Structures are given as structure tokens and as C-alpha cells.
Amino acid sequence: MKSNRRFYIATGMVILMVVVLWFSTSTGQMRQRYEVETQVYSTPEHRTDATRAIEAYERVMERYMDATKGNFVEISGDIRSIGATLDSIDTKLTRVDMRLERIERHLGILPPPIAPTPDPNAGPVPAPAPAPLPARPPSTQYR
View: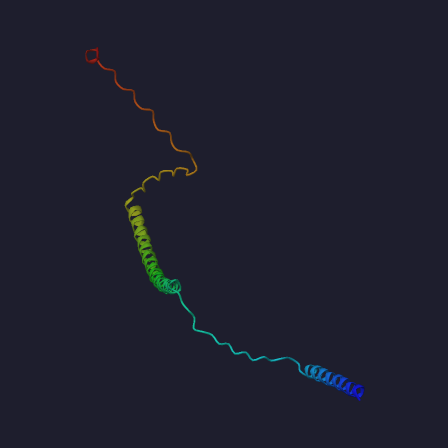
């Protein structure tokens, strides 16, 4: 009787293992992917004094860059208006120059001779030699 009982227990254990093994492999074969829901419990971020100082510095620098950008926009607008003013002055000076040239031609005034421009690639002009000192008269010489 004891041998039959052990046989039935061993057979039941083998059948139970086969069933457990069958369920574990069959469930995994049917699923395409596994989804795992995670819950993250976190504490609020601890900011140090250095972190706060760095963030404050970054904010100040961003404000400074915005102000600089605004100043550059104003300067570029000023430069454009100055350029337009200089162009109009150049046009007016050209007209005056043309009028003066006509007047000089009518009166017979010759234009001044134009001096040749020095060559910018030429070397420096040598300085003239110093003049000799006059000799002292014999009465003023030291004895």
C-alpha cells in the first residue's frame, strides 16, 4: 500500500509540473509584448545655493543679451540713417563741384596741378643729413 501511495504521489507531482509548465509557456506565446506599468514615487528636487545662484546668473545674462540685441538694432537703424544722410551730402557736393567747374571754365581759371601720389609700396624717404655745426671763434674756446 505504501508503494502504491508513493507511486500516486509521484505521478500527481509529475502531472502537476507538466500542467504548470504548459500554462507558463502557452501564456507567453500568445502575447506580442509585455506592458509594465511603473509608478515612480519621487521627492521634490533639492536645490542647493549654488544651483540657485547659477540660475539667477543665467537669467541676468539672458536679460543682458536681450538688452544688447535691442541696442544693436537701434545702432543699425542709426547707421542706416547716417548712411542716407551722407549719400545726400555727397550728391549735393557733386552738384556744387560741377557748378564750380563750369564757372572756372567760363572765367578761364586753370585747375591747380595735381601732385603725383607717392607709391604706398615704396620704402621710407631718407632724411636729409644734418647741417654741420659752425666752428667757434678762437676767443670763445676753452683753455
